[in-house]
Length: 372
Image (cartoon, rainbow, N blue to C red):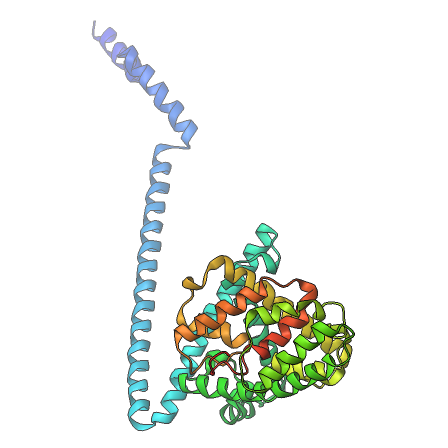
């Protein structure tokens, strides 16, 4: 009896818990299968704990780095504010230049960002510049002019240690070397007036050349109308829109087309659009025609947008581009002139670009005087 009990105890010990209960045996087999599939519960728990610890460390590291960056940025802003206050108190003239340069850099950065957006839109939608809305088309046009103006100063800055020379040149010649983002508000008015005085210096030459060319026209009635128009403008009067449309046929295929004008006449018209007169005649004719047609495309886009959507700054810039110095005119005067210009421009065809170029002079020369 004692032997059987010992044998039973020894057998049960050797058989393990499975011999005591069938359900325990099935549970043990399932646990063994799960452990074999997962690589071991203990190892899995260790991996999970390590992942959690790494995630916690990375989150804490990111939070610490963000807090450090925020603290450094706040300290830099405080130092910059104190520095600007010091400049404003001690060196007011230099502070104006500093603040203008800072504002110009920010404006230029936003302008480049906007140009990239427009270029991406054109690429995705396969649009040409003439299919863009008015503001996008005008930004592209102005950005191209700014890049062309910045090329000389960029070439000067290429040699080593030439940055100091560039700074000196930009200080003494801001109108010639700096783009519009780096002009102070006072400089904007002064420089626009200076450019307009150069442009208006060519207006009498354009009218004289037009009157001389009118004498060679074969048709008597249109010739007399054009001569009367030139005499009216030379006398200080403003022409009416109907007078310009009455002679439109003379500017498409006759001696008054851009491709057939005299060289001096073309150079005077080129100065109206701020084109250098020191170019070969064929290239100057091409640039003059392309600039006039670009303005014509802008006019159509502006007509679709509506003059009421323009801000006062945009309205003045639109008038200035088309030949009128709007820096000293009121908003109502600028709008009235631009409405007249759009009525003319949207009536003309691309073959009548010569009349549109001459209208920049004919409509602007005596605008401060009442029409007769």
